Length: 224
Image 1 (cartoon, rainbow, N blue to C red):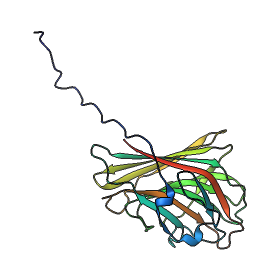
Image 2: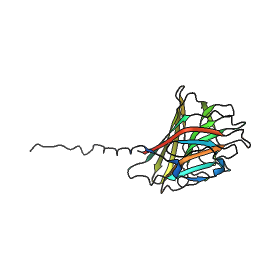
Image 3: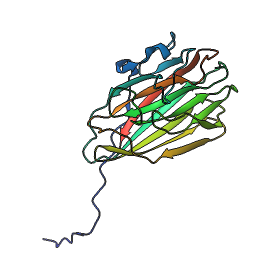
Image 4: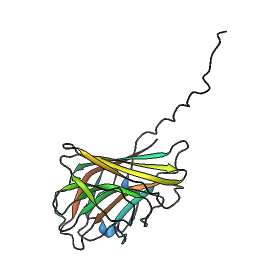
């Protein structure tokens, strides 16, 4: 019988990633539904309209949100990756403010100050589409880098230590010019017994000029 040498110092094999799962937004819990435009259609691929009304994820917390549980953090996993694609970009002028579509990760099915992370896109008062900052609800919204050429795609990563979300990053790219990303290093308030995933829609100006439409939006997630 041959003698077999075992390397007891070898690193254990990493747990395999979970498959990508598509999020069906029609199954989510909604809040501030008056910010959802009448032409919104929710599903595995969605048309997302921001109404011509003010609502934001700043201190007023009056943005639209749609969140659903994707279960507890799987054993052996520490990072949630969320992949979002916008197939058809907005063409409307929101007026003197910006309209936002954000990917939203939270510990409950509600919008609450300092709880969870957001990152996504903005339709600006200059009729440009920008990548918006990674931030927590209750903070001001911002963005930079003009996008050119759909589809727009983005990846949010949220790192967990136990049931605490410690850090989130958002990186986005267009089909033509390039991309941009940043991170939010402060821990999210709340215990992530379950993880909730979805979207937020908002308008920053007090009297927006128009409904803004993000179309053919698909959101997927994976644990690593």
